[in-house]
Image (cartoon, rainbow, N blue to C red; front, side, top):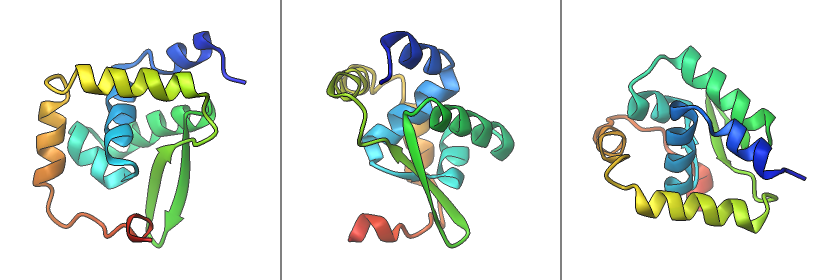
Length: 115
């Protein structure tokens, strides 16, 4: 079971919070989409995603050459509530990331989103 201390420690970095909130909003995102949205290097984004996966917040799946991340559905309801409340209250804070993501060309086709 994830404690509040473990969750908040895992989210104590701005890049991890932004990535988690974008994933919360989108349902699932590929590493390349997060690299574009967060305007950072692939190794740095992958390192942060590995930390989020390691603490149990995210799950990943491979689809061809792409690796997609989503919230762990086994998270306690209070974690989902905190993330959704934070997302809803901070759309302006994520605006630049959302704009980059929406403007990204050649986004990978997410077969999981259509099934």
